[in-house]
Length: 196
Image (cartoon, rainbow, N blue to C red):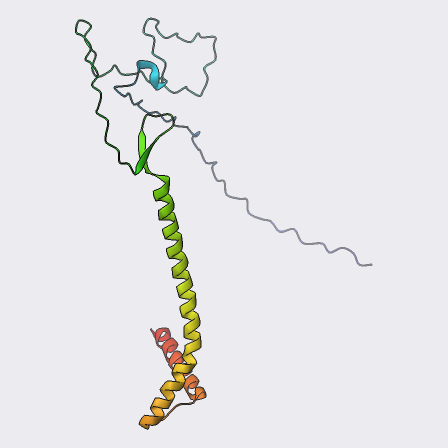
């Protein structure tokens, strides 16, 4: 049995003292917004409680602990832009005349509002949907049929072209020679972009 290997003790330099980084505590910015007040909305309809001006805000007592997170400020509702004078009679509301609707449309009222949207009748929608489905099906069917016919007629057309070339007296390339010419053209096309 061999004795354990003892490594020599090497003196190392002390590490440099690096000061600890001083970072500020993160702060959260509470989003705030100005409430939108509509002229036709009631005063308390915006969901903001009215600010009471009779009582001054309470000052925290010295014994109470102050919380670090502050609450967002309560937005005070601005006064309405116009106020009807009490001595004058309120203006009578004028009803808008009903808009003429076509016999081909029906109206749908949006839930929660008084907005009405005109929509075509069911007969018109079904006719449009049927027409679009038939046109898409015809296009897809014609495309598949055309591809099949091209694959069927390509040999017939190539035989007819070869016979015409023989009748004119031009040399006719065999299938292997045509394939070799195609490979040569493809190799030239791939070599040219690689050089750029």
